[in-house]
Every structure is written in structure tokens, then in C-alpha cells.
Image (cartoon, rainbow, N blue to C red):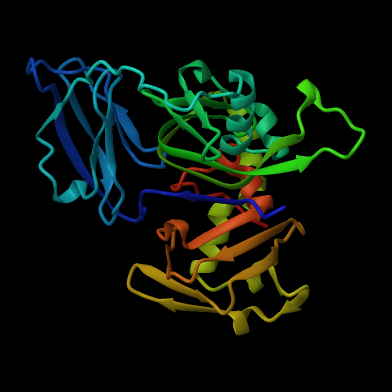
Length: 352
């Protein structure tokens, strides 16, 4: 079976040293009436506010951030400002969504809703043990479709997917922009003397070969109680040590070896400095690998496989992988997915 790749693209760069106040007003583009209760947040972080009764918002935005500012409200098209500090935010007009009719289906979907939900949860929430403490609160709103002719399972949702992560203590609002599971179809011919269902001569099966999802996210605390927060902080710090976020932060600083990571090539351990070159730019790091595939082990001996496409890898110091499909994972890091995702403004108190 071919390897499964998982890659998640974060839509932002986050730098939290300085802040600058931003403010604006959100209106309905048709009625010009203020929209109260709209979410205004920095993509991928826990920084955000809700518009007040008059549609106003105001909060401190880190001065050197190059992250997108997201404005969303149920029933309206999402608004995204890639460079908010350079944008006019005084008046932001949201457009109401048109009534969406289901497209005419040419190829019938042979899979049950239950089967598609199982695949979606495995490759969106993850298959690591931490995913058992995660629940999608509005799963019924996620539209799923499997196309047997292409072997592609897709998902979309007209509202942010709400994920309750009881292990880490987060309520995550995830705007799903893209979700694809690519399956490979295999046909098994029946042996002589063996009768298959309905007297079929062959049996078809599908196996996942690649998974991809893309979106923007906003993190909120599940509880403000001191006793619960203490428990959540401890779990977050433990996860952070082996997380994708920390891997990219350390990779950007060229400090994998110093932080307990081991790299392998063709089943043998190799010197990291002989296979990874990191060039520090002003606000980013440019990373190049010598070969296209490497097994990697973290400080807890969890194994992940890294796959490179030959494109350049750009990472900032806060762990934002800006390279999209240039780097992919299978193994431990791929299994974490959204259930093991931390806000990009997360900073542990201590990391042993």
C-alpha cells in the first residue's frame, strides 16, 4: 500500500512582540445595518473579539503580524484581509449568502453517510488517542460526497465546524476551505470455486493514499476555572513537545538535534547537518533537504515520515509552515491532525 500523506496549510504568520490597536465596524452590505455578534479574529490563534450591538470591534493586533484577519457571521460570506494593517477596516460590509441548491449528481454516491463520517473524522480530527476526547458539535452540517469514478471523498460546510477538544480544553471554530481524501481502487479477482456476493467475478476495495485539508481556525478556552486550566496547561505543554507546531519552530531555528530529534535515511541514522540546510532570512527561514524522504523520531521516540516535493520550504519563527504541499507527513505527526493542533500564538510556560 502506498504511503498516506497529510499536510495542513496554515494561512498566517504570527509575531507577537508588539501590538497595534485596530478597530472597525461591520455592516450588512444590502441593508447597511450594523451586524452584532460577528466573529473578528486572527487566523489560527486565540486572538479575537465579537462585534458589539452597533457592529463595532476593537482589539490589539500584533504590530509585525502578517496573519490574515477573518470576519465571519452565519448567513454571510466570510471576509478575509491578508494584510489587515494595510487595509481600510473602518467600514466592512458582509454579503449575505445566496440560497445554495445541491448540484446535480452525475455519478451516484454509493457510500453511506455513516461510512463517510468515519473517514472524515479519522482524517480531520485524527487517529491519535487524543482524538477520542474531541467531538464535532455540528457534524450534521458537514456535507460529504464520494465519487467512485475518481476515488475522491470531499467535504464542505457552510458554517464553521465546531470542535470541542476536552483533552486540551479548546473550543475550535474551523472554517473548512478544502478537504480531500484520495482513494486508490483495487480489484481482487475471485479464485476458482469461490462465490462472491451476487455472483460477482471480482471484488473492488478502496484505500486512502493521500489526505489534504485547508482552513482557518479560532481557539477559545472551554473553561476559565483555575483547576481545569491547570490541567489543560499541563496537557498542552506535554503535547507541544511532540507537536507539528514545535517541529516547525525548531526546524526554522535549525535546532532539531539540540531538541532530541533524530533523522534517518535509507534505514540508517544520519547527521542532521549533512541533510538539512537552513538559511535565516529577515523574518523567515528557508529550509532545504538533501533527499525526498526521511524517517524522523522525536524526543519521545515517535516516528514520522517526511516527504518533500522538491519545492522550497519557508517557515517563520512561530512555526508557520508557508510551503503548502512542499512538505508532507505520515506516521505520528499526520495522526495528530486537528485534535493535536495548538494555536499559533501558543507559548508553553516551560518545556523540559
